[in-house]
Amino acid sequence: MMEIIKVKDYDAMSEKACEFLAERINRLENPVLGLATGSTPEGLYKRLIEKYNNKEVSFKQVKSFNLDEYVGLEKDDPNSYYFFMKDKLFDHVDISLENVRVPNGVAPDLNQECEAHDEAIKAAGGIDVQLLGIGGNGHIGFNEPGTPFTSKTQVVDLEESTIQANSRFFNSIEEVPTQAISMGIDTIMSSKEILLLVSGENKADALNKLINGEVTEELPASVLQNHPNVTIIADEAALSVASGK
Image (cartoon, rainbow, N blue to C red):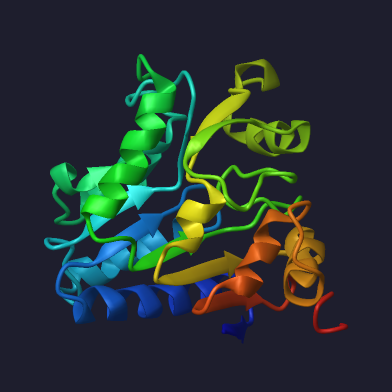
């Protein structure tokens, strides 16, 4: 089942997502969250920190697994997703870093690291809520078009469009890693619940295809049509094509 919640803009999306996630964290005894990086969830994390500071939510019992990490970046590299998560959320709330797992992009055996990520998710009892964004080309995590729906966590080659999109975070495009470890589509689909956040006109086409198009590996996010419990929180600009405006 797919529920679509339409909101006015990015701030409203972030606020609604914060309410959604805080409710789950407070209700579940030992919440297991799948977390995402990038500009889409930044507003959400900011609001979760505010909620924590107001004593409206606690992360003490939370375990988290990140969707992805660049290959070749150390944890303390400002462009690593581990650094991002600490900077944008973990350092500001009461989550134990022992309960946090971001794939290790400099692991000596990357394939083994991918397997370990999936095993750790299973050992935690599976992900209760997986947070996602969507790429302009329809990717979820770093699962680029053509990724098999049966994929587990794996090392992926990033498409040129993804490298271009991520280059805004780096000094030059040459510095952008060309590979990442990403939760596989099957790994994502094993989550009990999925929360997809979408903002901006540049995502409108991909979101329209997700909602109204066919389920195809050429648009990885379209697989969400097959998940029993998906909530999409999207702003007016992101829904402009799907809603015919």
